[in-house]
Length: 169
Ligand SMILES: Nc1ncnc2c1ncn2[C@@H]1O[C@H](COP(=O)(O)OP(=O)(O)O)[C@@H](O)[C@H]1O
Ligand SMILES: [Mg+2]
Image (cartoon, rainbow, N blue to C red; front, side, top):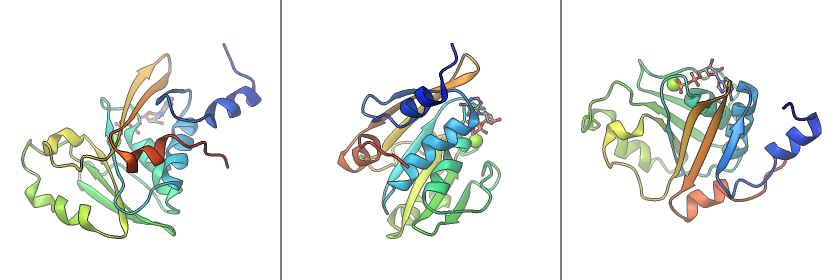
């Protein structure tokens, strides 16, 4: 069933309280990222889970936009980390696909997480074991009928501010 433009807009701008959404296109994934990105504050941590091609980098692209970054956002699989200095906020984008469990010392994760002006978004976060702060937004993406399904879980008050408020343009 195709939704009317109006219904679609309403759906995309609904509160994210339930933490479940379907995203029918790449543009919708970016729009969701942007909504969350506009609310990111220094110290915020967003973990992105899902298989290859699930849309993690696409969502990170939206987060960077929401942080006020206008440059290119590509997969950091080979670089492991990119930094986007947005107008509003600096965003560190990590992709730990190739990092063996426990091999996070070289990444300087502690330094990234201690950066007082930055938020952090991580693809394949489980490669770093239990290194992440307790309060984080956990986003899981999966393929669903041509689009993507998203389940979001905030594990603390800081992350809940990213998820639960109604956000409009
Ligand atoms: N909601 C969506 N519906 C359909 N395709 C999407 C959606 N979100 C992202 N994509 C597409 O999925 C592909 C893989 O996305 P990517 O973000 O690179 O995945 P990952 O980082 O999880 O490997 C891209 O071609 C992107 O355009
Ligand atoms: Mg990726």
